[in-house]
Length: 193
Ligand SMILES: [Zn+2]
Image (cartoon, rainbow, N blue to C red; front, side, top):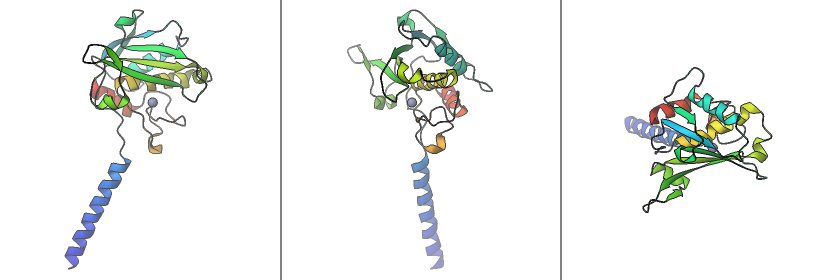
């Protein structure tokens, strides 16, 4: 009888542990990725003023301190060669920047993928829109942090919303503590590219 009770308790504890683990685990990436994303070019729209912050962020992403990854990202002035296009807007809201990704539909026409499709299809290029209303209020380090975070969305990394993840570059709220690429994100880059 004792043995049976202890078995049931063990089973209950295992089940509870499994449920808690499942509830607290949060994926840092989507299942899919940027096609041929290891060696890419980026392009900055003529209306985008962040011509210093963007190259700085690119450099921090390619050459993270104390870490390595295979990314090669160079600047191009030819938009059609770019897989990461930067634009600027000015909207009075709380959003610093936003990222969209694009793939071709069955008719061969590019369309903006809903985020949910990032688990189903690879994409060909991404667009990052910098909101000058919010980014204009930041100093250079947090600006570059936002740009790195958005670039990581193009590479296929997701936002993390658990408070436990606030030290990650992929933390999705503005009270995150990361200032540059973090090792959790770099590990995903190495696995994907
Ligand atoms: Zn984000």
